[in-house]
Image 1 (tube, rainbow, N blue to C red):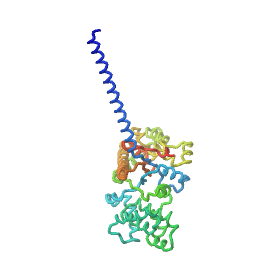
Image 2 (spheres, rainbow, N blue to C red):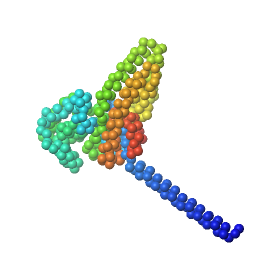
Image 3 (cartoon, rainbow, N blue to C red):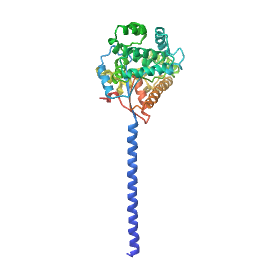
Image 4 (cartoon, helix red, strand yellow):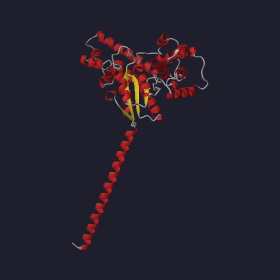
Length: 377
């Protein structure tokens, strides 16, 4: 082979090796960048546990200490409850059920405590700081509870009343007991109004959790913007479902009867499943099986029965749309507040019917990592 050709061949081989090394280095650099990006994204994600809860635990045999400990071990930066943000009450019509319910409590507190600070937000901030430094300023906490009521912050009014009634009152002196009675009335009145709710998920789980974490605040995240269209869609679906049920009862061989039979079979707990659920209710409520069942119970069989003979498919779709809107609003409230606080771990206590819907919505957000309650240790 001529020397010139040999040299050219060697040069080409050297160039090829050089290019290959360059490509390898670039590929490695890209892999490192991608891995770093994934790691950074994972580190920046908000870990959220949406806990399906019962609004009435008065007859429950659940070990609530175990539930609290499990959530406490998660070390949440924020705990959210199904309470309406204070600023949202003013946006609701006066006949809204949530507004009417809390208005009774606000009126009750205002009658007992007619004076309102000029800058109530400033007073709340000042009292919060004082209690953060020393939680046993009893009169300060009483004032804070009243201020939250006047600000229409039901979640934190309820929380401060819980702390006063359950943790502080046993330590009151005579003067403090007299002041407490003057500011809030009797325990019977508070229970009748629903200020003190011993069987609620808040009294059983979330308020003790917040207190044990030393956080002194619950974050409100409910959304009532879509309550009216939801009510209309619900009423429409209910009427059509009753028509289907009536036809099924009149003719056991009708298509409607077959649909009703399928629904009743679908939403029934098997005895073994019921036994397992009763052994640990909160584990059960946060299972995928329960997520399917509670949709069926609350939505006349649920989305599974779209298209079945006699089933009110279109009406239920309207109902589902408004329910989705509400849950999306709740999720938005959570994310917005968590970002402001730069929270990394969040616990959300909600009625059991909300869990799967909220998880589906939140899971679409790349900044969120959903963790199921049953995966906590």
